[in-house]
Structures are given as structure tokens and as C-alpha cells.
Length: 118
Image (cartoon, rainbow, N blue to C red; front, top):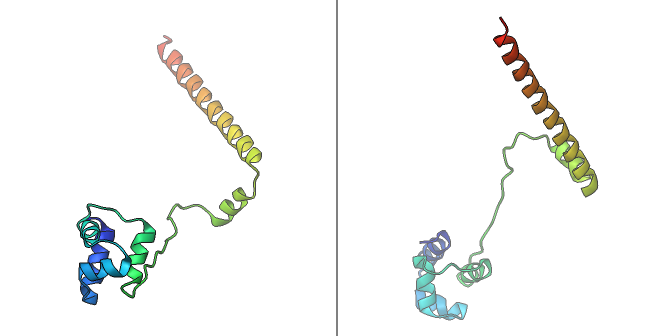
């Protein structure tokens, strides 16, 4: 069962509304309400909202910030950059990472050569 279907069923039962009555209020078929509640049909957000509204309730969607550990002021500064600036900065970071990788490869090669010397 989809979570939206569960919510429709919970609200409908709490409000004492039959599937048939809900279907009539929402301008649909009782079979459609049944399929939504069983999770066989996934309603669009608009249909979901309509079903709740005709039962006297409204959906509330909320968001929470991601715990990404990034400084909000740094993110805000990045959003002020033009696409060209972002690409240029990304390329410079890519070149720097490539330089680190090459230096690491040289250091490993040099260490291996030193280990082979008598």
C-alpha cells in the first residue's frame, strides 16, 4: 500500500466517510478510491490534495535542511557565481587533483626505485 493511500484511508475512516461518499464528493468512482487505498493506484499530488480537502483536511508538506556539514555562507557565495565561473573553478580543482595524483605516483615510483637499490 502506498503511503498516500494509507493517509487517505486513515483520514476517511477517522472522519467516518465511506469510500462511496468520498468518491461522490471528489467526482470519481468508488473503485478508484479503493485502488488508491490498496496502493494499486498512485494518485497525483493534486488528486491526493483534493481527496483530503473534500474530507475537510489539507496535506502539509514540510522540508528539513540536509545535514551536509557545509557552511551556508559558502553555499550562498557559490550561488552568486556565473556558470562560467563555476566551470572555471571546477576545472582548476580538477587540475589540482590531477597534480596531486601525478605527484603521488612519482613519489611511489621513486620509493619503489630506492627500495630496489643495493
